[in-house]
Image (tube, rainbow, N blue to C red):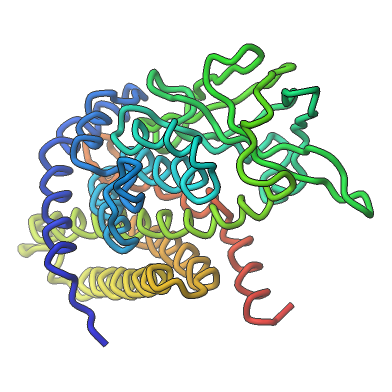
Length: 383
């Protein structure tokens, strides 16, 4: 077994880390305070090649492996969760479905701009009354001649209402199967289509510099050829998209935990109480040791899942495990990191406060911790 990164992966990690520290870290706190999505840092991330990382070069992608992509997400998350969310959702939820299930025409139409970071694309899955029960989506798409007519709404959709958002992939009910089960399909809807509105959501606790949207469809008409893949395959496309998306959420957990840990150990070495650094007290030294231990375990679990995907082997169970464990590890790490900061950890001028808020989404988004345990239980044959 070889645990070393390739030379290319090592260079990528150093490059993205340097970029995040120089370009994102200085503005992250203020963007969070203003709840502002930055087109400037978005363009810089695009120029660095952080979008379309696993997409074939003929569509404008970088042609990298999945471990390289995850390393990039991890390094951005080490500095700021909002920017990491933009990259993770842009690749896994925006580009992913188009790349893996789109027609050749759809790929060539949308992917070049998305892979260059000139545009963003959303993944319309969650609804006000359909979260964990994604198959219970109420949004409908009825075929009327040569057009799909969509009605319904979506919520908590990342990257869908920025100034450069190009459109969304919408999972909608397109009919019924035998036994009354819904037929679900994915349909592409471009921003600016009559009857479609994407509204930014505000007053969030976390990822305040990431774009989150509500989507509304009111007799929205799109061409019949805007269906993604085959009719009725939407639920399977959604599951495959979430499998890969869990890896990027896990990377955000590992990276965010790493960033919070580094803030904690730096502060603990500098903070003096009773005449010595608080890191030297055993109770605090053990906190830091436990953080380092769990981060290392989470990273190894995540990288194994990515290795399985890169080698075209079954990775669903490992992705669910990595997402579950890494997101909960970050929760434990940020909690102790704030504790080590004491009262300062509760103040916005200390970055650990932002890490503490940003973590919570990881145990909810792209499948709650409860759903991950259900997925794992099924895959190990327990239920």
